[in-house]
Image 1 (tube, rainbow, N blue to C red):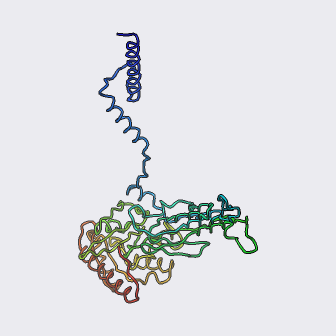
Image 2: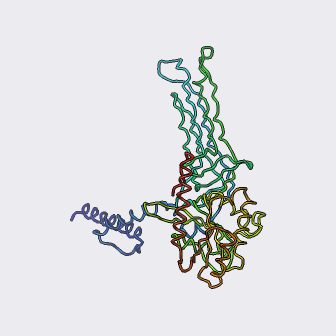
Image 3: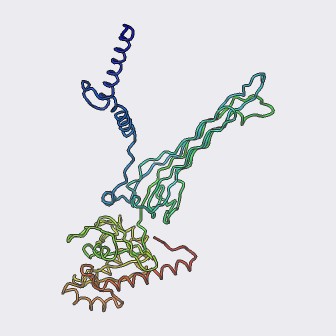
Length: 408
């Protein structure tokens, strides 16, 4: 073999060793370990796949049902700022053999609005996902050749249905239905380019205007639970147990008062795909309208309920006083709230002392009382039938007024 061929063969061997060493280092192997040449394409593809996997940005995982229940927020102060408008351009047309091209600066784009949108969703049950500040998208600046800047996109903020928007103590919007929208902050107008200022007495304007800043507002969001029926009662009356018995909702149940610290909504299904939403309102005590106990923080959730279910603990002495106290608290909080269509539910009929109080309760109230047991399921059918009667009367009244009834 000639010296030239021997040198080229050794040089080729050195390059192969360097290539194998680079592949082995990338695969996480020791540099001293030499890999066969057939494995290099496979290792290269694995290395590229791992690199691409590392480049993928992990998406934001939705909150679980457990965390949504834990972080229930029904009040939020939000600073909303509309997008700023883009600035106008000041430039002149430039073209060979055309000395006086004239102004061709385009206008800036308008800033994007910030819009609140009511939505019913698994991930939008409270105001916990609403941030304390939102900034709209700004518009782009104008360019030469009469190019206008792009307007900023609209920023939609998803809020649960039943959100009340207040500004300075004044109600400005009520997002009580699915798809309701409210423009929280307007985007700024885009600036004008020098093309806009072209006139007969000014053939070469150099004036251009900047974009206007977006609107800034401080809004207070207040959530009021939207449901057809609202269960109202004192602590430990069995409201959460009753909601678990008639729907798939799973609120916490325990033998101590104030187990329920946030409203829960359960859906009762009927034939013909008819659904009735029932809300479990946290327990009310005497003096709740004066902000005692859980206070008026949860009394406002009753305002959205179309009819009420007064849940009475039948095992307590003189159970009729519970109904009087509940109606008094509702009337003191808002006039006319206790006069809405309602039903009296006497719970815990399975206890021996409860049956003795049932006849006295009916005599004092002078109206129909639905006696049942949420624990054993006794007489739940009568409650479901009466619930449908109340719902049908509500739907008929809404249609008679020319309004669309609430649907779930």
